[in-house]
Length: 293
Image (cartoon, rainbow, N blue to C red; front, side, top):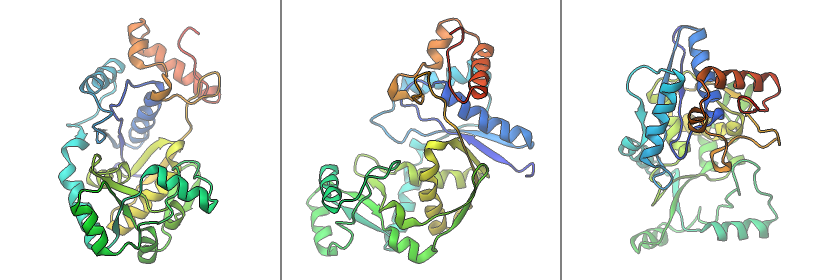
């Protein structure tokens, strides 16, 4: 690697940060530091339903308390919807997107009838119900205001780019088979651009050369590689690190009420104690205990 290494820490302000986020931040920062590179901050706040201004404020407070510094102004995804919209329009113009009018309930029922098991990471694979809907019928439904999403036709993507490769620093060379992941949603009325679309566009825009993130996103990276190929974007190297878990083996996550950095701070723990608890967890197979436990 060269001094041109560029990583990023990209939290979503949908709740307080926890120690798992600290692991993600340190993984990105240390990889960049080891090679004289740069680690940037990106705020992934595209889901307006889940974001709250106080969570963004808290995020910055936590980073300041821990002494974690990132150069320049952070990229904020909610300011970039025009850019994502232009990319979606490009994909739509190339015939790679189609409107889908199925509800989640209908999709689950269709999948159950087909006997297809849900994908372990990405949910139920879409069976392609609306893929070949007559264009005039689709246009009529859109004009009538029928709720819909925009899906990426993975068969067309695979026909265009084949099965592209990417490299994981822990697992080696990987081969993406786009059709394995179903026709993923890239936009819907209440969600102008999906995580999958935003992350590949923003990694390219920020010149990210190495993406460090949790192992739970390993499968999603295959989708991102397919998007990079079809959009002609650079391909970073990836490093999917292990996840922290509590003493019951449950991974730390916002929705599970994981111990937040704010709560540790307010309980009187120092940044050094929190960092030491993280290092202990890594030595003990990823099982994390609060300082003093």
